Length: 157
Image (cartoon, rainbow, N blue to C red; front, side, top):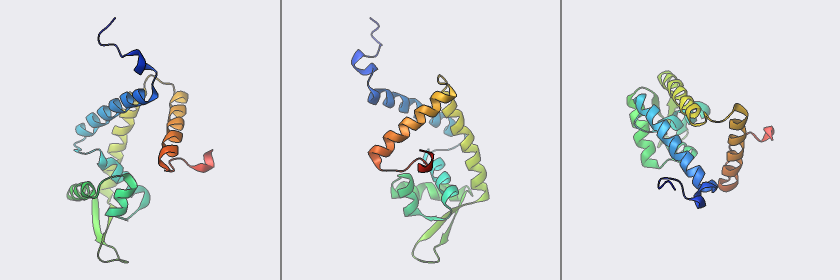
């Protein structure tokens, strides 16, 4: 028996397999983000949320991507220094700022999109395109069930 083999009790456990898959996904994303000069994986989520929703308060942005308030502030500050974001006073509530993605931020997001796509491709390389679609659909259902989040377009079902 190989001392490095996975114990039989773990091999068919979805929770263990998902954990191992997540670890590999995080490793691949981390490597690609590091190569792109990004110090935090949250930059991609933050830029993607802003590109989709338009100007948003930092608090709403944090809630939307599941990021702690202080982490949002640090990421927004860094991305603002890079020219990817702008903060402007909220015309409705001058006590808070709205964050919006800039043209430079859109270009940077496109670069990060390519890196994430490459990591996805590497992670899912053993699967056919149909199997990849099926895996994503099943994982979406599990996440939606346990979190109450709506990840999919309900008109597709």
